[in-house]
Amino acid sequence: MRTRKAQDPPDVLVVGGGIIGLVTAWRAAQRGLATAVADPSPGGGAAHVAAGMLAAVTELQYGEQTLLDLNLASAARYPDFVAELTEATGLDTGYRTCGTLAVALDADDRARLRELHAFQTSLGLESTWLSGRECRRLEPLLAPGVRGGLRVDGDHQVDPRRLAAALLRAAQLAGVTFLRAAVARMVCRGDRVTGARLTDGTEVSAERTVLAAGSESGRIEGLPPDVLPPVRPVKGQVLRLRVPAARAPFLSRTVRAVVRGSDVYLVPRENGELVLGATSEEFGWDTTVTAGGVYELLRDAHELVPGITELPLTETLAGLRPGSPDNAPLLGPTALPGLVAATGHHRNGVLLTPVTGDVLADVLDNGELPDYARPFTPVRFDRTHQAHQAHQAHQAPEVREEQPA
Ligand code: GLY
Image (cartoon, rainbow, N blue to C red; front, side, top):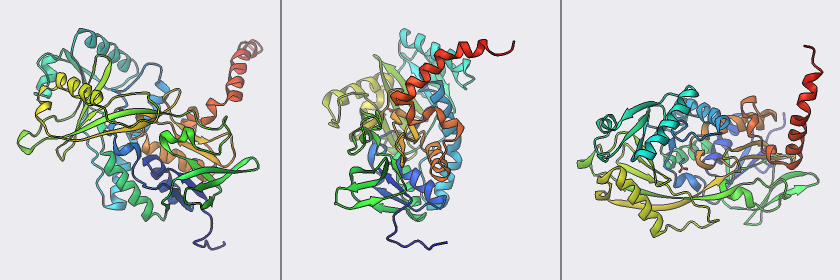
């Protein structure tokens, strides 16, 4: 076997050093692949803003059962995943098995939550209906008007900043190379992607290039339009407050509600940080924290937990979720040889980090998407693929008629 030299091109170039890029690089390096990550400040990105809810059940949406399966698979991997990260790095990720309480503030919310509960139950998910009084017994600082709620003991949290720091360290320890520059454009030769040119002028060649650039993935230069992932930025404004020791425990689990049609959630960390999120705005690339965004988050959170306004406000930030047309990630080989996607995680980037690492490791190691990840192939958005699917669906009844009875 030929010995690798430091200047040899990597087997895998990961474009983007957010948590998805880092987990991909870490897992690829563990499989023995020479791996490089291109990012001016790895460990940043949307995870720096995110609250870190692992909310497969409370964030369940109608029509997204396929995504639910992937979310649940990733949630189930979390305990081993964070234990492995801590073992490898000595760093804590702030994983907390505290559960979630989703509450209703008026009769309409109550009806909506009742329906969600029936849907969850029909899918075999663990979720318990509580009266308003039972909700307040669990969380005494809830508003007196709370009309009922869902207790979901399996929806936990992790601290995404600590998770990113641990992943960065794990990747470094596993031998991943970090190229501290942004990608200016992808490089294509013939019919394949052969690497990327960085903003410092260097060109990095690699056998496989993974596009893990979060919301930027949809506007990366150098790719043919039909291969560019249909990923768009979805802005989320998030506030951080501090619970003084004298007021602790303020909340013992994540508490959330839908107020006037908008999601509001409060995620209490063990270290006294309380994360309040999040807006969901489709305003392109803007990451301004607005007076309106802060006002609405505080107003809605105050309706839920009135004591919130007495806490020190320590941080206001906005990040961009990488939204995709069906709210599900794009994972695996694209239609362009040499280019692999790990993007479009939308509201579930933190939750889907463990399973994304495992899927991408399999793809990079043996070229195949594991069966459970096939619904998330990036090719599902290709026009030729969609036409083929439509044709198959049209043909199906005739094929069935030819089957023996
Ligand atoms: N998953 C929470 C959010 O995207 O706001």
